[in-house]
Length: 373
Length: 84
Ligand code: SF4
Image (cartoon, rainbow over all chains, first blue to last red; front, side, top):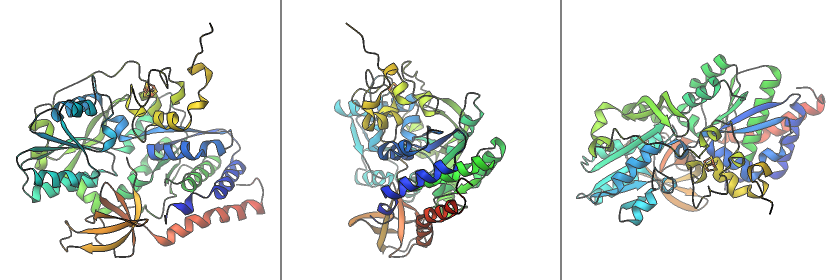
């Protein structure tokens, strides 16, 4: 397909890796923020092409992975009500809540439907005026315009039976949380290309300045990621800490003004809890007051719920680049995609899922002790 | 989940800017896509689509420039091996 295939050329990838090796004189740790990039890196073996001095760590950019457990519990509770049609992106169905997941709620009679777009949920609400249709609005800035659009459509159509369970998160506050944590090894970032397609790149400039880190806005194909890494290494080697844009075919400095305007209209910035990480101030979005009537938490009286996370799951460390999935003692043993302990094992962009799918044979022995008879 | 896919806009329906939709071809597979965030998108252009909404228009010139970048840095590298 155009704009995809030409960025997957294996020869070009090798030549990029050589250019990176030539440019590297010291060890550097670079974090790719977005789970989509993590999957591309593990799937195409981008990390294996790099010189040993370059360490890639995987970041928190998987909205499914960071949706807090209590949100899953709220979703399951709402989805189990007989009057509700609960619509969600497919990725959320296997994510474990405290006791069960949405798929189990569906198996025991809940009307849970997978939709490709929040606007499909609005259409379902129109078609079923006697039912309550709830959309599980998770996502980063990339997904916020589509979710905002659904609310705007519902308001226009005067739909009293549509609401949203909102658990929206924002990338820059998470990057700041990682940079300000004392244990961080991250010296440079590949920022998420589609988040920046929507938001632009200006909000990363203070981060690059304050923490003296290069931030390269990067696309998702192997050639994009390698070029982004090359640009990041060049900055590190030259002692620069700037925001650069590798993904120029999609990202403009000002972002997409119509999309940003839509987000501002429907949502307001607020604190959010991140699964495995904890609450980060100003790190997410909730419905603006004018749209509070569409808030499913209020409509179904689940706003105050809290829940504890599995003590065994280390996804918080994985999401902050402090632990590689195979280093988790439960990886591939007590935790698998069929029986996940954490969201990073089931999301299509979760780091644990990526390693399970593409790298299972390469578990380090320490993480997989063999008991001698 | 931030997966967004490039596709070619092949037709546009409606003139209400907020409700405008279009058919987008993803390697021959057609899907209906909302166009509220790309008011200037024209038939024949490539848009980038996420969750049923076009979130941007792809810039063909920039796309070509990205593909030329490798040759440029190799030309630099050959002139002065080991130099930045
Ligand atoms: S392997 Fe499973 S238990 Fe370990 S961090 Fe990943 S999701 Fe959590």
